[in-house]
Amino acid sequence: MLSYLISLIAGAFHLLLGLGTPGKFPPPLTAAEEHAAFLAMREGDSDARERLILHNLRLVAHIVRKYYGTAKNAEDLVSIGTIGLVKATDTFNPTNGARFATYAAKCIQNEILMHFRAQKKLSAEISINETIDVDRDGNPLTYIDVIATEDNVEEEVDKAIKTSRVRRLVETVLDAREREIITLRYGLSGAAPHTQREVAAMLGISRSYVSRIEKSALATLKSYC
Image 1: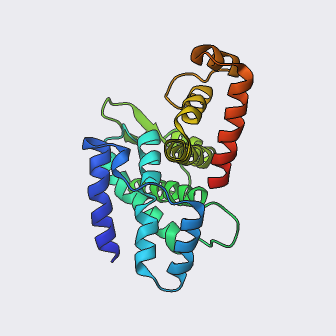
Image 2: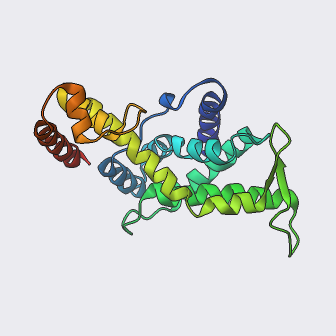
């Protein structure tokens, strides 16, 4: 089962890193779906386990592309990071109140760091400035680079996943006017966010009307989160 998953995931990440886009991956599970899948997995449901892994592939992609994307062995790091994801899925306790994305991000990072350590056959003491890899342009990747990413990677991943969920909800649960105002207010189109007054001027409506629609839309989004 594990070899099958690794093969499937490696093929999928090849698309992401070289040929495709993150849109080719299954979207993140909702909190309720994720919790239910973990409970089912604990009862021996192997399909639930596979679902949890597949729907969190973009988590490994985010880490590898953001922190190691230019490394010459990026594809190897994808496979190694995936092993960390599998381990995280098998050891996560859904009743402890922590987010799985936070826990899994740490496991993925640890797996990659362990790989670097094994590669170098570390002695008892090493320099944090020692080169552990070189990217395609010849720029060195040092231990301090890896360590420095560990402090905020969970926050970055969590933010990316939340943003993805919000975008999906905006497109599916809001009406056209609500979607337009939320997109402009919070810069979901990739542009800078605008004030209510700026949005009102752009759409030719009053600021108070923008405020009412925004509040209603945010309440709708909150009910789905």
